[in-house]
Image 1: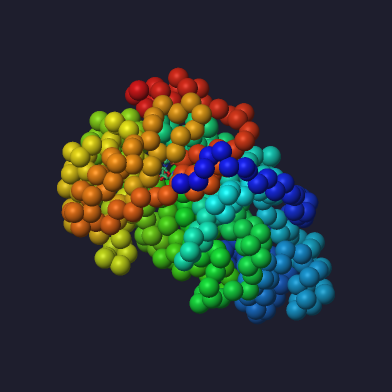
Image 2: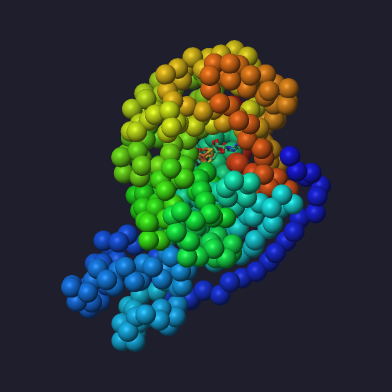
Length: 389
Ligand code: SAH
Ligand code: SF4
């Protein structure tokens, strides 16, 4: 754990980007959409495949967003691109670097809204935690994002844009699938419920997996959901990434309060969707996230119930010490309690790593994200009511 009183390294910067104009943004288009767009703007059909490949490689492999610098494209083709399209990423408003190396980006997207993305360096990997919505419609009572009303879904461009910006910041372009990367993994664990923005998340992740672009394998992408049951199987079928479930409780009574979507799809329905998740195996296990809240869900009985519930599902259990935020109605379980809980889970044969809070000094840890603008704030009363507190 980092020392919360350690100084914060503020690195304020603004990267110049193409001005926002009304032209269609090439970022975020899937290959078929890009092909259609180029043909629509006059590219001959028989050249379309080659052109798509070239443009794709400039944007996603080389990180070049300025048509003039796409030097292997004929001048008239570059002019055609500039007349018809733009290449726009979200704008970095601030970048904060934690004493532990975690980087938190506050990004401004069209409409002036703000979202956050967090890069977490580790010894053997580097993970970018990205957002899928501005705010969240759900109201998990321990989550800071849940106190912010949904403003809107992010577009595919804004989702993949977070990855491109981070690669820019890390100076990491032109690396192939087998190269060692600073940014080697993506988790959809930032702001928002990714399965309430399914199509945009799917398209953005398809772009991230494309072998000629960012080229991250589907096994290096993990989508976390609070339990949008009807979309879980689709995630396996249409994205094929790894799945994490925000489980957090072992009885419906408690889960109803912590993760109110449980009132719609309860523990049984959620676990059935997990059992049906495509490609589930010992090498592709589901991660069950479990936030440790003192006196709420952290007893030995909870641990025993948990392993019983997930019996037979290839799984690992990720224990997340609660990360507090101003006004939060919970406390973090003690270290001793977390260890005792973990021991029971371990004894039942499940790996149960405790997630080390990262970037706490810059409010970058799980569940602490929330855009700095609090214009669209849910009332405390609404949160308490929805959570049945
Ligand atoms: N909406 C998705 C993904 C974003 S949250 C989901 O709920 O799964 C990523 C993880 O952080 C989830 O497991 C979430 O429950 C957890 N989380 C939220 N607030 C937290 C907090 N204050 N402390 C620790 N974990 C938290
Ligand atoms: Fe939304 Fe996830 Fe936070 Fe729940 S935990 S409020 S689903 S972001």
